[in-house]
Length: 118
Image (cartoon, rainbow, N blue to C red; front, side, top):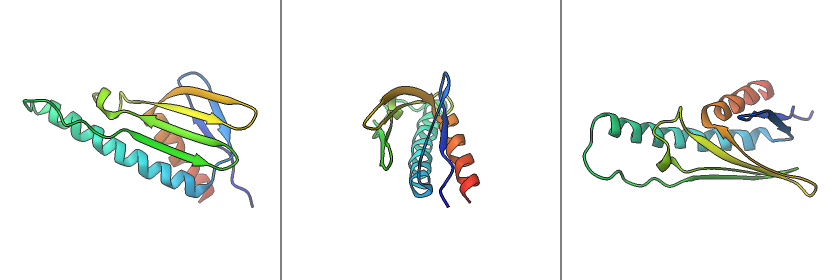
């Protein structure tokens, strides 16, 4: 039995493609780590910490299957997980799509996909 396609809701529109449940779980883990980084940075800012914040490593997720998917986010430029956006590159031999999406929406899309595939 094949998995349903993953649909990512973008700022304007959406994109659907074949994606493995294992790839989705790996992406969900990468997003969870990124959200923890963003929450920690936001908490330090809210508590009024003095001094320059410690630069965080960007999230760079890559998946190669029927398509190549790359998701990138620099946590140093977003004040919170709710404001953060990710850069998405999706390509195969015929087409290349590069766009931006909200981090929280992508996280929700991945969770919904994993619920569908069980």
